[in-house]
Image 1 (cartoon, rainbow, N blue to C red):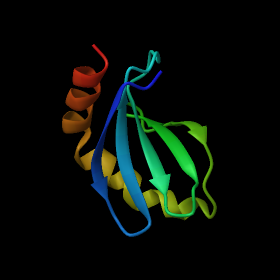
Image 2: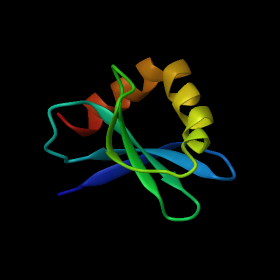
Image 3: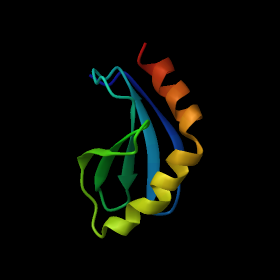
Image 4: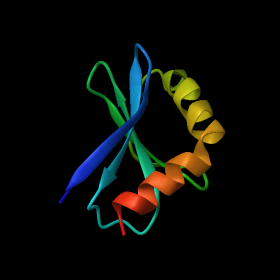
Length: 82
């Protein structure tokens, strides 16, 4: 059950969110797109854990942002999911 969430960054087509209270073994971020599409991305490997986006190239700028801010996202994930 999600108990808290932090929106870390947003663009016109997407935003990145970290949820708290999740029972997942892999630290990850959620990318939510304006059209309602959602993708979960592992913070360590950048592998897509769940979801789908078409065309796939739409995810590129969001994943680049995650890569550039990985430490900040990991810290927030750990804070929310102790």
